[in-house]
Length: 88
Image 1 (cartoon, rainbow, N blue to C red):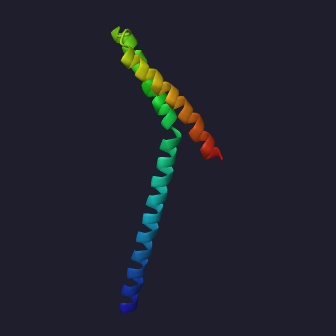
Image 2: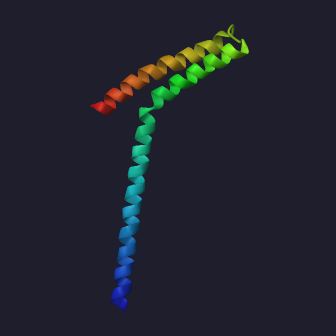
């Protein structure tokens, strides 16, 4: 009976370690996927700001327009750089 309990205890330990390794791998691949799309997210945020300014008629505020164009440019550069680095 003690051998059975010892065997079950070892099995539970192995399963727990296997689950932790899979969770870490899942977190790593999820973050890598998010990092890969970071440039696209920045471009979309900048474009949404421009569209919102257009619909509200607030096209004379240079701060908002400048921020959105900076987001688009930084998003484009980061998209190219990150995807090139991931591909290599």
